[in-house]
Image 1 (cartoon, rainbow, N blue to C red):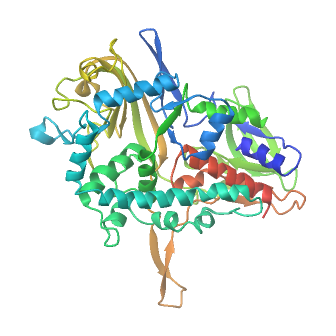
Image 2 (spheres, helix red, strand yellow; image 1 turned 60 degrees about the horizontal axis):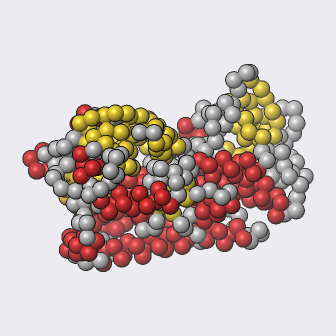
Image 3 (tube, helix red, strand yellow; image 1 turned 60 degrees about the vertical axis):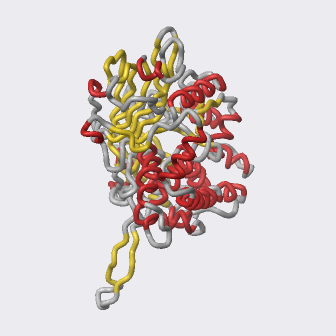
Length: 492
């Protein structure tokens, strides 16, 4: 946000603003947070939150290039750019890319519903063509996904026109993006199984649901269709990470903004100033003491439902309410149980089936740590591996691993549940029997506008994270931040 504010002011030929950024933690990056562990004299890196981005994510890619950050194909476990990407490719070749594992199948011993794939790509393609009756379903879903991505990329065209493409609500933002807009109001299963779409249920539950379970921890019968489009887009492009951690993008952007950063500082309330008309008093506490400071404009870049911040006597509390996914991310170095998966090759990504959450939603192998490397896959099957596990409850490590050398568990509210924005039929007016369709709008951008200061039309309180009700990615949050900055500086 601070970076875009500085750039927008420079582009307008206006003097720089005094910008303060308050962060209650000890680091910059929010959900972009990297962890490390030493193993056999090697530092292994793993993304604890926002893990990857794709080449179409224009802001993220441009910032990585601008700040001379090294990219590697995800997972970037060894933080060595192309070398790490080569290891990722070797890992996928040895293991196969993914498999859907039913832990209750084969009499309780587990079975592959979709196997980890053949070493020979052509055989995997033939199997997929047979299982899903050709490529029709994939082509149809991919066409919808491509349209959704194209509509989202209109945002960058808006940014190129300083006088257009400024929206005061997320509904306005969607007004010229018909597929994105309609996709918010239907569950993915409703949309794709409708007569107009005609996607087969097997493809929906195995391919589309695999993508939504990995990206948003939701199945196709709960996630909105836009979440499904975004999840499929992530699987159709090369996934990248920044060597050493994605947080560096946001750390460098903040440093380049010239903003004053206040770490270990919790904001308690934002109220209209009693001392100066048209300003806002921000009350905060730091490690040393509490303090207050008046600002012309306040932009909130944290999920308000998870933040204990009082804004204008909490009058916007209901408007910004959102239900967040409560999940566990568990990283383990250990040896997999030899009888956990059916005999044969194991995949790099293991996903449990549609509507299954035990013992996990998905497990990904980030690195094979056998001294001989991934080899033919047996080193991963029989030797130590670094894994990342998503689950809705704490993982029973003894069920999954024969040996656990190290583990770290993170419990958090990761992103909003991408439930459809439900529609209700309501009375047109108290004296009429007529009804009309009223849809729940996304959370507001503008929480307050202060009209008392004509010389500072940007005065107000603005909220970035409401866009997460549409979908949640690193790139979409940068787009949201840039939109909100332009709105704040544009005035009305």
